[in-house]
Amino acid sequence: MEESKKQSLFVAQLKDTIEEKSKRLGRPVRYHITTMGCQMNARDSEKLSGILAEIGCEEIPTEDADILLFNTCTVRENANEKLYGHLGIVKHFKKLNPDMLIGICGCMMQEKDEVLRIQKKYRFVDLVFGTHNIWKFPELLYAVEAENQRVIDTAEERNNFRDHMPARRKTWFKSGVNIMYGCNNFCTYCIVPYVRGREQSREAEDIVREVKALVADGVKEIMLLGQNVNSYRFVDGDRTYDFGDLLEQVALAVPKIRIRFTSPHPKDMDDKAIAVMAKYPNICKHIHLPAQSGNDRILKLMKRNYTREWYLERVAAIRRAMPDCAITSDIFCGFHDESEEDFQDTLSLMREVVYDNAFLFKYSERPGTYAAKYLIDNIPEEEKIRRLNEMIELQTQLSLESNLRDVGKTFEVLIEGFSKRSREQLFGRSQQNKVVVFDKQGYRVGQYVDVRIESATAATLIGKPVRPAEGYTPTAE
Ligand code: 5AD
Ligand code: SF4
Image (tube, rainbow, N blue to C red; front, side, top):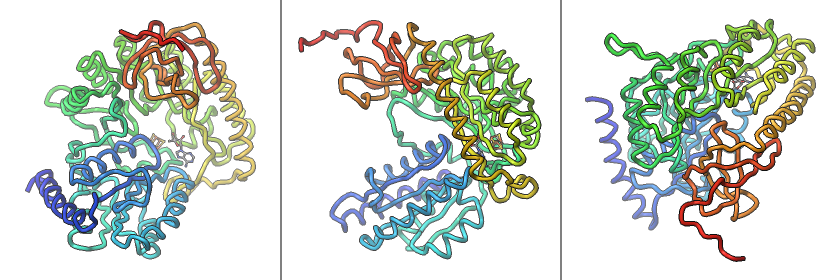
């Protein structure tokens, strides 16, 4: 039987099981998903949430649920520690509610040693599955719920049912759309290719169809997702779509809706994709371009396949085509053999680019990677922390510098919610992905608004709408 039909059948059967359970409990069956890691995981969780909602479960904000899932990350060691921290706590929830089902999925569950540890030492965990067989969730959940089995299945089967799983979005106005899965780059420090597998691009037409359906459902911003989005390549008969082609197709399909993407690799950031970005006003003027290091010797040890010079040339090409484009980065310090001079090159790269923002880390050795085998982790922890703090301090200055340059300019903002400080103010994000706080003036969440910036901090732009919302009349206070 075709897999998608098989899984739909399990969904139907699960509905009955959940209904019975709910009758027994005298209330709806409650679920919660704790998501760690990147936007790919966030999107996967929305798919799991979609299935759980479809079978009649109700989402709650706390972990004392009847069905509790952990969608894990393993990119750095502290991500793994986080899971064990949570498990230590929820063990007690399960004692109070023996019917509770605890499941773990995501990248960490593609590591054999971690699965073995869960299997042996965390006997209260009922369900384990991986990143490749997430589409099998209905079937696996059915085995646990209806057949009362403990299920551990992390098989590397791929199936495009995962593209069509019903998703329940965290926010109604924004959605991710997977365009490709996996990574072929094998940067020496990185665990991702081992846990997410090789690159696989989705059919272009199918992506465009999903984007249109989301927009018809009210979505105002689409984020194209992949471990390495700009190595997207799909061959359809005699036509090959690369990332630039796909970006253009999507931008044309929903011209009134903002498009973002994450993350591109600098080595694949070609002129064609840059030109497409510049051409379409609905493609957000923001590129997250992870540099990782500013030193050529370290970049080589990392197997990044570009030099500092190449990277800076790509930044210059982006700025030539789009002077208003924000550039952000991922950078980490303390990789194998990184000397003080090598580290200074990273700081000087940051200064030269003047990143609008950056995610900064210290190196964390991941078992199974090339670096774990051949490039010893020889920078002392205190030194890594010192370097990380220097990077953070520098980036705070650069973010402030970048934000101060925006004072006096006007930006299109997609409104995301109320500001932390006041119900009279809203916040949203500019195309450049900067947080903008502004006076409400009749606007609502999910709308686009043009905001003129009046002041800035390192983290936020503060301004006023260029004009109040239609029909807005200020109340006398
Ligand atoms: N140690 C520290 N940071 C890492 N990253 C990936 N692997 C490691 C590691 N082993 C960072 C990179 C990547 C981001 C998602 O996480 O900067 O771009
Ligand atoms: Fe990891 Fe490198 Fe692939 Fe990014 S490009 S996911 S850092 S291996």
